[in-house]
Length: 247
Figure 1 (cartoon, one colour):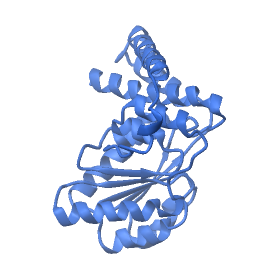
Figure 2 (figure 1 turned 90 degrees about the vertical axis):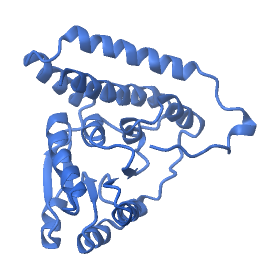
Figure 3 (figure 1 turned 180 degrees about the horizontal axis):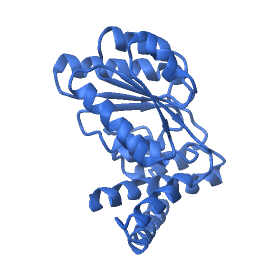
Figure 4 (figure 1 turned 30 degrees about the horizontal axis):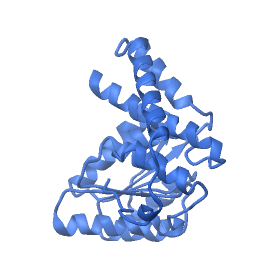
């Protein structure tokens, strides 16, 4: 349990450190949502697929993408929005269909922000076909809307890692067992760093982790970010090669 808690804090601290690094570009991508990315993605493995909006680097880091690659992309194209927002829910339905047909036990997770584009259509499809898909939205009211589709809707505090982790664990487990889709509605207070402070208070008050251990992780992540930023960028001839990464 101690190792798992350290790993969760490391993921959240890394996401926050990357966010702070890219603020200088004026491109604020993932405001204080570390607990949501970590709480969901720490249940996932190589069988699973995720998709998100343009504020997606936190999800990718939580899923295991190399931080150097994430920062390199952001530094190279800071204002770019490469994902089609409205298509995210249906992309994940496609991934879930593939996992179901191939019987891999994999799940698809769509991080929807405020619930763009084809969300309701995708939820309807996932319900009708009983797909192993999880839809994570910040749009208030979606958990109530999906009741008519027979899809479980769970409302959680998105800044509380433990609440998100519990809800996501149940949703992922249900999907892997053939129980169909789930929608997780996550609310946020929008106070930067709040989820990190809540996590620290929880684990130190309970005695599960010491402040010194968390401080050491902070320092480790700071070194990682410093090394990543100082690493040489891609040569001009290499910019359009090897543009895909598995995560």
